[in-house]
Image (cartoon, rainbow, N blue to C red; front, side, top):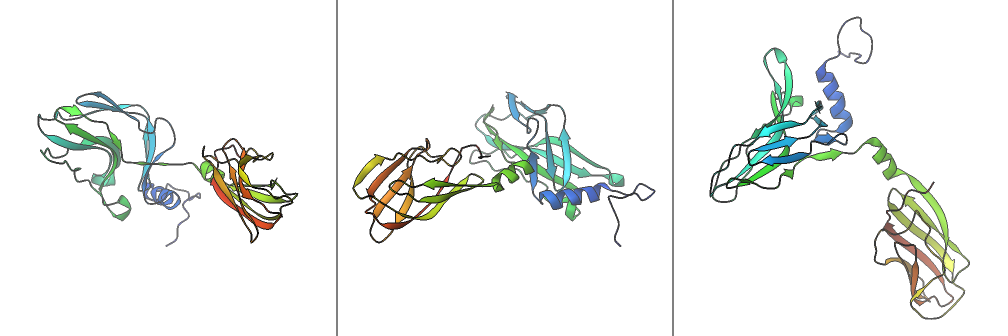
Amino acid sequence: MAELVTGHAGKAHATAEQAAGLNAGILGLDDYVLNVHDKFKITVVSANKVTIGTGELVMQGRHVSQGTPEDLIITNGSQGMKRNDLVVCRYTKGSQSIESARLLVVKGTPTTGTPTDPALNTTSPLDGGTTYDMPLYRIPLDGIAIGTPVALFNVLKPMSDVWDSLTQRSTTWRVPYSNNSISLTRVGDICFAGGNVKFNQSGENNYTQARETIPVGYRPAETSNVPIAVFGGNTTFILYGEHTGRVVMLGNPNNAYAGCTGVWVTNDPMPA
């Protein structure tokens, strides 16, 4: 039977299960740390203690908030033995269907060989699981020493970042040795060059600097040269763009009709 969740029903009717289903449908069925606060930053305090910073996460649609840093105890290691422990956020559904979440350390098995991660609870609460673990960090131990923690989670970027990655801008750029221009189009951080031109000069170039520069907002991110290929039956000519916008030329335009094409990544701010 259909039920209106986000509507007035004259009684309490919206459930945590419905909220989790909405979160999972929008954010996906994976587990994510959200891009706010300390993002559960870990600090090794001693040989048997770590501190987990503040953060927000969504595990199988369940939103968990860590408002203050929390200390977790690591069981001491043993001389000559190696071990992997996992810091997890554990969801539990107990008696009377009371749900909770907490951070804890799942201890691994000591070994003289290569340690493996301990087993976790992986049945999603969306599938009826009553205990579920979202791994946050692997804590490697070699003897009594704690190694560098390894992050095991993905940070979910906000919608504003997704919007930026889809933003599109375009301009025209006059090609060296020509009165014609080609199109420069930027989608997110990717730039595309394309168009047809008629060159009006001949002469060999050996990485000769052009007067023209690639405009700000479209400059290549790489410090090395990025090619803008020029193709045509009567020309062997390549333009190379640099991160400063400088353009150098190689080959002979040969007064030819030609096409220009190129793709590169930019770190420039998005043009207005």
